[in-house]
Length: 343
Image 1 (cartoon, rainbow, N blue to C red):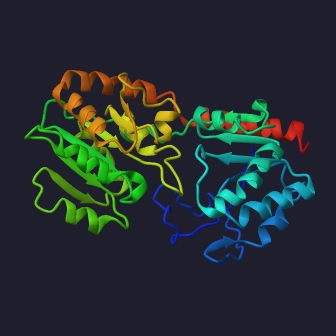
Image 2 (cartoon, one colour):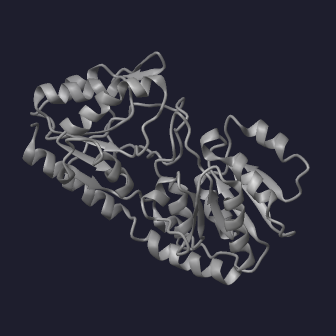
Image 3 (cartoon, one colour):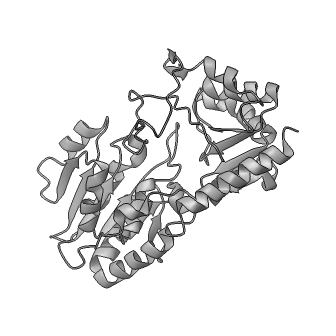
């Protein structure tokens, strides 16, 4: 398939990161479309005009964008260009805006010709919406570039290291992780917090003087394999807020490709979607429960052989979540949308 990519956001957006592609001369042809911001939302008015059936057989758009999503959906609907919706949402936010827009979102699920979802957990939620056909939903398990972690060899019987990688934001549940780690009596265990965000000062104040907690700060992507090589386990203690939950958590894939077992809450998409399996390649605990989270950490630290075994299994399981599988899902969704069109 010939693909054209339109990136609607820029470096001011909080989710901008180094995973976005580097555009080299000769690899891509830049198309200059003027971008505006309206109430903080990006809007590219020329883009809907480009969605013509003589130019594109289908269009893929993710669920976000309060202006771009309806404008692109409307243009595709009017011009008869099949529309593929890509979504990882398995919890509908509870803000006033999202409560009011829920019927519109559910109508979108019913109307679009095809949907690609992050995992089976998202598909299950969509099928609870009346009128959504299961045949048009294609599951593309989230994946990362596994080759970056092929050479990682976990430290094994060295100093136990509990690792967190992510944004320092409420939805990541770092306060719960700190409370859980306080329950871990292992005198040599270290908790390493990698990332930054709006709660950084709060977290620094909370761990001030704590000899077993290290705030590493931001680490670029090429530095993560070395950090994971020192980890006994990765913990992703995400929680559900009014605005969001964890759609997936790609750091889980990165850790598992490195042979590191994962402890995740049930608010993490990678756990709900079947990548992290309790007692198999890590542990899954209830969200907002520091006691259960601490118990899981203690179990792994107290049984290094079990941690190594789970890490080996994690590497095997993560291999099933790859780019080929994702590409197959997108190809299947596009072909289905083109074949069936708008109802």
